[in-house]
Length: 78
Image (tube, rainbow, N blue to C red):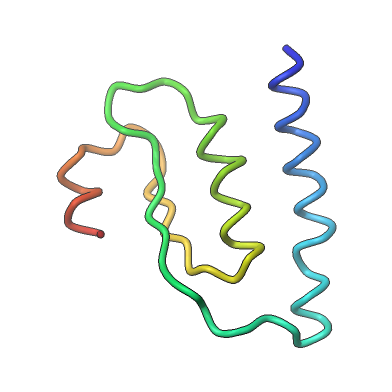
């Protein structure tokens, strides 16, 4: 339960802080691309939600493929 609450707190904090660099025009060009998603058959999406926000905040281009994604989709997107 604590892990879920921590994830919700992280998501809420990112919603507040993520727009700040954009408003200040401090976001550099993307240092790279991240492909993230929940692999087919896995019911857990918590990590995807939390981890996906971190590279976005750092300026990476993030492609979130969503839930229940076949491995081949990850490979083709990468």
